[in-house]
View 1 (cartoon, helix red, strand yellow):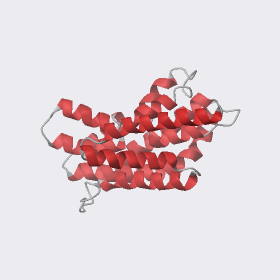
View 2 (tube, rainbow, N blue to C red):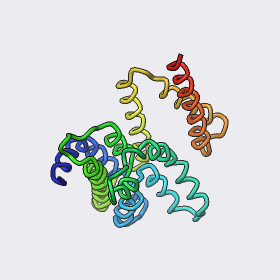
View 3 (cartoon, rainbow, N blue to C red):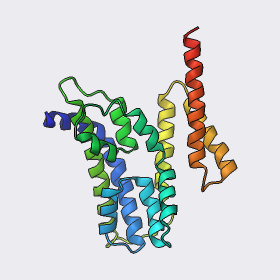
Amino acid sequence: MKRKALKAALPYTIPIAIGFLFLGMSYGFLMRSKGFSFIYPMLMSLFIFAGSMEFVTVNLLLSAFHPLYAFFLALMVNARHLFYGISMLSKYKGVGWKKLYLIYGMCDESFTVNCTVTPPSDVDRGWFMFFVTLLNHIYWVTGATLGALLGYVIQFDTKGIEFVMTALFIVMFINQWEEATEHRSALTGFGCSVLCLFIFGKESFLLPAMALMILCFTFYRKKDRGEETR
């Protein structure tokens, strides 16, 4: 059962592996360029496992420690996982102890696969989602560790390397835009983000933007239901 689930999950994670190895190595290079041992990116990628937050944490480790600031920054950077979690409540029912790791290890890419892919009828759904999450976790830890180790022997200017996460999200947005036939959700998210960025500034716009998106999507849902009942 486990072997079938692993074989079914592996093909869906191979494209993610390429991206994670590259991004993870860039993160490892960045950490090494700031003077950290390879142990830091290896353990941070293992236990934090939040790519964008790990890039942000580099500066947190190099500045004065403000636990409350770090908490709210982590909340803002990863607030989107609140929405992921809500949408996965039904998916994670009945998977036993694996649910704990699925919650801990959920990232954008694992969410996309586990949310949209239906495993074959002879493959256990819980184990399929578990291996998707585990493989992606392994790719990220491996990339970060390799990047840090290579940082000992390869020296280059790492200025601007933090932009790789921004580039990743832009590519994901473009890909989903091309695949979708209806762009109301994407335009709503973009509009809410730009509006809140203008009002609250780049340091504080994320949570208000998320809240505004919820209000907009709730309105859309009620409107669509009203039209269906006519």
